[in-house]
Length: 477
RNA sequence: CCGGAUGUAGCGUAGCUUGGUAUCGCGUCAGUUUUGGGAACUGAAGGCCGCUGGUUCAAAUCCAGUCAUCCGGACCA
Image (cartoon, rainbow, N blue to C red; front, side):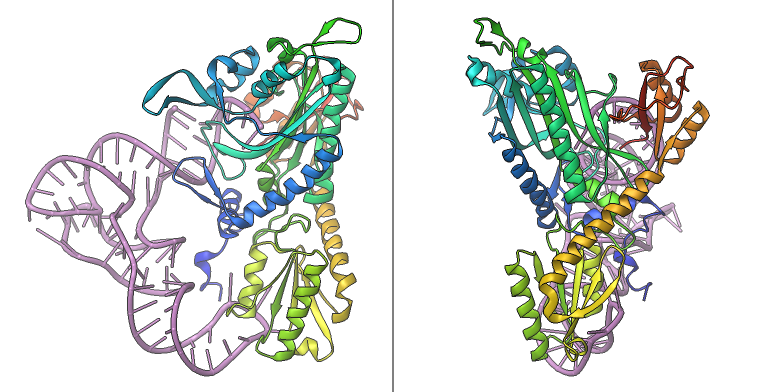
């Protein structure tokens, strides 16, 4: 049996994690490669996951007063060059168009790697009065970064994301916005993706080009490497001054607004795969799963089975549960494996044997637990099981995260932790030199400084100077 | 961008050393019997051997270049 299906088997997760990852991406039909390096095809099953994330976030954004807009794909190079730090951060990875029709374009067009300058230059034209603020804009789009090393979802030359860009009257309000959006991302993990994050502020070295402060949520993958999963930035007035965004305030003075930006991308799909997946393939958290429940009939030609399946499909769909009834010619065993690989959270088996006692069999993808229950109780049972599955997945991931955070007290310990994987929680002096040293010695980088700054050591274990911040170091994607 | 590996049907592969028109399995299609953990039999279809150029009477095979993917490093969401 095992021999027979060797060809399309997924590489075992702990044998070769990278290969396992790409196997899952392709075999669960999330994506495919295109003809251009780093540009992937989002297949319906993968794209649907992104749509669920988008639906959830879009609702949250609107609830907090944001509006969607759409900005152009291209930025004139001359405009892009206006903010020095920002340009220096992105210049090495831009794709530039300089031919239009058959003529050379004198001011070449940069395919947006992010849209700070587009938003800011637009804001410069529409913001004149304190009455025009705040401006709370967001856009769903794709951006292009000319990456050297690419991997599906984790690092692409083009990726899908949302980018929020806001302007505020006061520093306080802008800082609150930055943290509010970070919380929305954190809640997305907790309530939808079943992914717990480590969150906090980035060091000077790791913050976004042009930002005064960057915050991030960081997930821990199964191979114990960190994945930056979302960022929010506080810009202060750097961009608004550079682009001349100014308004006349109540007091008759000309002022510059305070700015933020924030984004999450299709990289989250990578996080879902690498946090929850196992040797049988994908394991999807119920609230983003394109198919939440799959009904596998056994002996579909049996009238009783057919009727029960069709009724259940109809009733569950009516309840708003994304349900699929697979009546294809494959054997039940094939279907079991197929939907396990595709990570469907809950499977329902209906056969003559079940129906004889008016029962159905539920199987949870996350732990393969089988539950036999009365057919008529589905209305309560299915939503309850989905919720349970979500909780179990979250708790499992949380346990894994907590087991892989280590407070370290010496440099040897720090190196040890990051080398074997996981977060080293360090009392750090704040000097970039120490970050560089860790990176040189281990390739690990600082991830973020948690909001709870309970220093547990006097001295920085890297240099021996006075410790100022609690910070996480880890090897990251 | 640097180092290593790979590219033959939808997938996994044989053939390459020593040039002669491509092997096998899975999948696909048709039919029959099947169906509680990846069904069986019979028959059929499916190939610019990644791409471009060179050597040769002849290239999957030899040579050069190029593109893509994977792994490791440097760089970044």
